[in-house]
Length: 397
Image 1 (cartoon, helix red, strand yellow):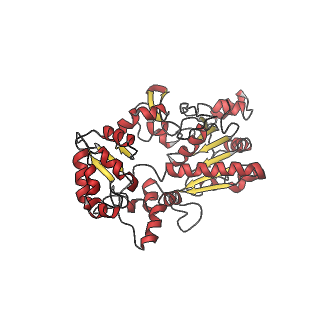
Image 2 (image 1 turned 135 degrees about the vertical axis):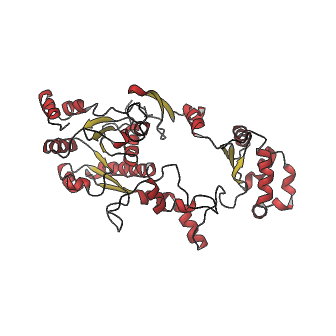
């Protein structure tokens, strides 16, 4: 069975999270992803948060389904080999500091002349143009500048950082969309193009509902904690036995009100004048939340989720990281998978969130640094064994 991106070759010149997340999804979908790394250390993520078991879990969770080629792009021989590699490739993804590849003489204007069909994808904190283009960024900077922090947190607290990586992995996912669109357009034109996604742009796109509400209400949007809009119930409720993550989120829209009351065993509340309409429930939300919270604290969060789900009322247990890794539903959907890697042995990682019926993703382990250097040079670029030995001696690879 062929894969969705069978025959597409991607050169992954990225590090840390945003770029590797992008390239990994392309690998999950079947592209041949060659991770190009500096010979002496490779992706800095290999060492970030290392725990004495070889390459870090931070690196492993972002670099499955790739091959690793080491190449010194500061050497003349390395640049020659790189340009030959570009001729044989469809997509390049890079997230270096602004202008880094241009200074090496390997920017888009140079590479598109070598391979007019190349899709050259860049991920930058603020893009390649605009007043902030020369500024560097990391996840919290993107969240702050994109508006995400300002609407996250409790009403009486400061702006709050979101642990889900909307600035890094979120940008990577946006870049995947751009690359797939450019591949589709290339079928018609035969030409590649420059795909650019900035971290700030991606976060702004994910925050568009808050920007809508700003314009709708005519003022800066504040923080509302766990309350979603004016829907009641529409927040997080405490559960038994009262641990730090023993909470369930319940979101019962107006048409689900009677079903919700049936689940909690309080059908008489349908006739309570405090709760007759959604507006009434919002006006008396403290009373209603107290009633709901009293009921939820007598039950386990997973039991409540099951009871609500069977009644057609949306609810979700607040799962901690251990519960996510052990979730039978996620395992059944191959979103939590086991892989083997070097001295680490078995570890758990995240699978492909995109399910294709005709070409399901197969998850393979990340590459050791330079593991596929000889293979790529020999099979793809027709470099002889003697020349490979010469390159290695000269520290080109």
